[in-house]
Image (cartoon, rainbow, N blue to C red; front, side):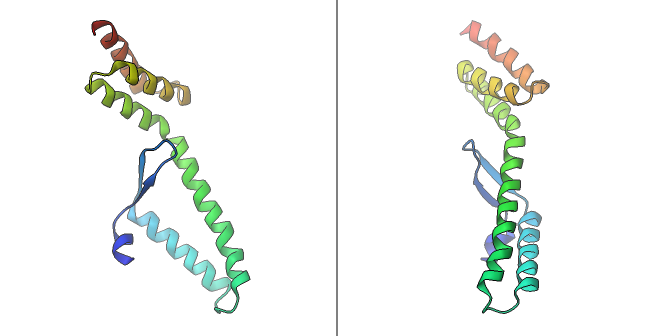
Length: 124
């Protein structure tokens, strides 16, 4: 378990992309959660008090991770679009880059990639 926490934690994001948390985030979340449980319900015979701490904290952690994943998914779409451009698949690139621009219309790398994809579409 300690070896697992010593590296980075990775899970599939909402869009099927791997999301990696830095080790410090994993450790600090675990330490804060442990301190809250120990402070509120230090004895093992208080499971309801422990759950009263665990449930809201876990909801906050999961909600924060979901918000972070959604707030940065335009970057993932842009990277996927650029990868499709390298693979000479402009139609898939256009779809990914348009998805990025729907989330953040002022993101210049997605605009540049979309222009490149439209250019490649005409040459194929």
